[in-house]
Image 1 (spheres, rainbow, N blue to C red):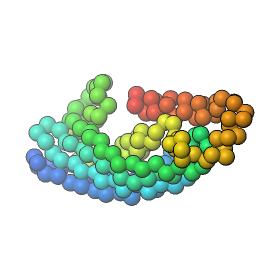
Image 2 (image 1 turned 120 degrees about the horizontal axis):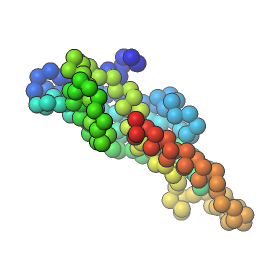
Image 3 (image 1 turned 90 degrees about the vertical axis):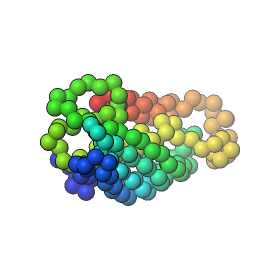
Length: 172
């Protein structure tokens, strides 16, 4: 069923809250493949609170990802400080919900494996186009780009692949 360190128990009493913290690095993102993540350090806090007919699952991501600027190819450090809220709802049959933040679980479920959800959540926080502010880009590279006036199809292709992959994940 996956890596047991990513399993969180689901509180059984109304109002009870359980929390778990994870430190994620670049190895966690190996599932992505060709997206350039040179290194990263993400502190992820997950809390799960029992409500009347569902659980609130809050994911807070704080840290950085070191990647490459699509414009100048220098290192680019992207800071992440985001929060996502999901709802685990008991439903014996899987209903096609239009809300991507609702996850249906069996009434017999006592815990939940967060690995796939954390992968998707953190991955979707990475910008599709990764660029420095124009004044922070490598000026030598920008001058050479201006000389050649070539459209950067590699960047567009990389961005298209990333957008397609994000759409694919959202539609699962």
